[in-house]
Length: 263
Image (cartoon, rainbow, N blue to C red; front, side, top):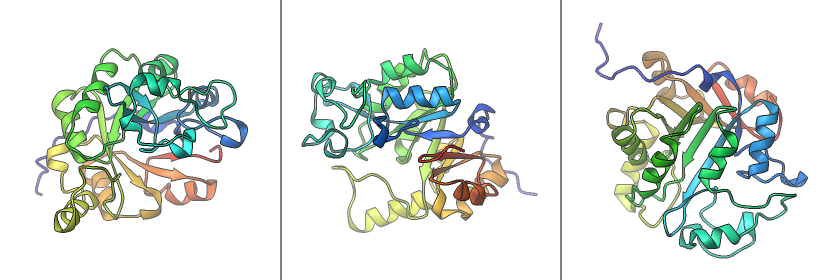
């Protein structure tokens, strides 16, 4: 039998032990906004793991925020990455009840404090800039608790492998090979090639992820199946919005990232 040339992934029981609340346990109608401190508090109270998104300010600070634009979550105008840390500190999350700040990652880490597993997604702009990855690594270096980092961007995962091999890392992917658009995105034939590589995990020899986070609507799929069956790599799946969805993907994934219901 041919042996794999890839080393086995790092494993941690905590990654698959508790369902993971997508952007924290949020409920906008109830005033608990995604990726907020209150969403983290709700997840901790419910005993769920937490997935959060991280972006950086123009002056290099890491914040817990999903969208590249400010509008949906703050009612403001412009791109998140064009704001300074001080400007972001002054923004408020729309419809929030109580704590309406956009959290700095440092404060978010202090709040979670190892109480539940934490999955940090780096929201790459696909611009070849390693600054946010470096900032996350620096903040996580002394974090005392179960944590891993993931990204849609294979280059980010490769940087994590090179600069912080002690931190569990994962690749986020789907059958379309999609990724967040940004000023560094390729066009035409190059973009098609990059999407193909992401969809089929052709970067795996460079990134060596410890887990895969795969779009639930694209399961079952050959790429995560092979990672799971041949390498023993845990497969997380996102974003589950019902108990029925969760039951369907159980045969194809080891963990769910959920919102809108409580598994």
